[in-house]
Length: 143
Image (cartoon, rainbow, N blue to C red):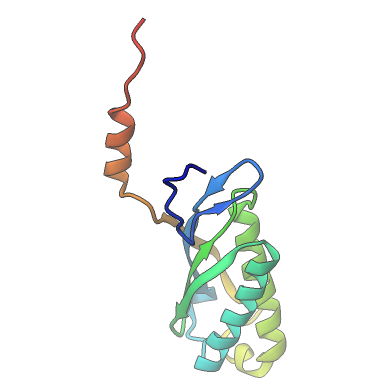
């Protein structure tokens, strides 16, 4: 890094990469059932934090309501987002069903906890319009 480098705790380095990747994830319960209690949300955060650690990612923020959760995850470029999501949903579903079995069965059935779909939005850095303008203003070499 140059001597002018201003360290940002979210900017990480790898062997051949400098990165700052964040994703906003939203997972919804199956049929949008209001299955979560406060204790379940607290446990879900713990589970998802552990899964992120296994992927060398960091769960920066977590919150939810009775029928959905929001996550802000900082992850390295070697992580395939779809695999991270699959693990987050799979591990949390399995553990929540084990630990809160009677409660979950009142709201959900058939072995499912999460809806099959999810929301993933990139976030952080400059707004898209600023990035587009920066790229557009690059000085192309003339022939």
